[in-house]
Image (cartoon, rainbow, N blue to C red; front, top):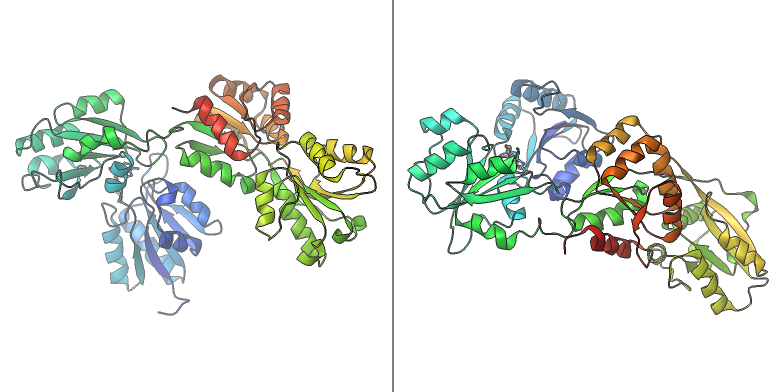
Length: 504
Ligand code: SAH
């Protein structure tokens, strides 16, 4: 096969959480020309392939459903046209995923293909519910079974009679057939009091587990309103849920939190909240654009201090310096001052140590720390690379004390165009919490959503602010802030959120 020839990758997307795709699966997405994805594959995974063509090829009531033959033909046709084709399937492509049929179609058409296994829901959903599918002393085997076809279950085509009496049974696609399954399993000799767990939307923040026995699991599942996708786990191991339900007992499990930060900056906040079990809705209210450097900038080495107040400031400053033909040595002798540990970290990554970082991450503290360190600021030369909309407190104070201040607009922030669709999706999401990490996020959120919708958001959500200035802006817009950390950085912000709305 030559590198220019097309190929089909049957990729397992994992059970739900986008982090559970394999490294190979992600690689295939990154290099894909076209992706045919299933309804069970997490759509967030498509972000690994922004330039590829995305074609929905799953079952959904509101969209045209392609038949299996149509899908097979499309895979073959695209590969023959020289494309790298990814067929992205929920879980593992060969476990109840019809991946085998697709592979056969490709083989008979002579199209090269690769199978990228995935983490199957029948193992992952129980794992996230604290249920090991095998367990010393309790279960030495696990059987994956389809519970989809009522007739096949009744007629014995799905042969339950010969299934191990002691092992774990995991049924896929079986919520509606739970009564038949329970009856058959009891009839084949398993104790009616055998533990059973139904795990729906496994590995997603909306995961639910219902635990009962073969006798009462159906009633319990109905009562709890369990909806597909769900797996049914039958066997002693299901009883371990109560003790090992690590995911559902995370402090922010299932809490719906809106992150309004610019996407480029949001990753740390999103990661920390996600690790604590939160369900995140990213609603970026800021886009960052580089600004043109102004003529009067001069030489960075001429300054006594460079004061950086954001990670963006660091990144944009270095981009501007590169454009000007500078190199790291031009910073020799210049002292660096930052607000915030994230900004310090951004400098560390460039092998630059910070000379001054105030205890509290606000401009007023910074002024105090500078004076304490330098004494007289008269005649000292300061460079402040910053956003176009930055507060003027710091330069004003520095000038009052006789310092020479150059404000360099390193980047501009713009309000993303808000589509009504996105704003409506946010309302439908019914958030528990909206987070603001700067005054602009609060202001832009209000502008993008509109007054009426903000009123609706207020009905379900609390508001959290990283610091007092941001809180003031939010309050002025009628968004009452009830959560605010003492130290104004992301880790403390997350702690404050856990204290306020988390389970303890
Ligand atoms: N190839 C997939 C299975 C596809 S069949 C895999 O390996 O996981 C679809 C069935 O998988 C659903 O009816 C449900 O039983 C199960 N399933 C898929 N995603 C699930 C999830 N997140 N939580 C629980 N069950 C899930």
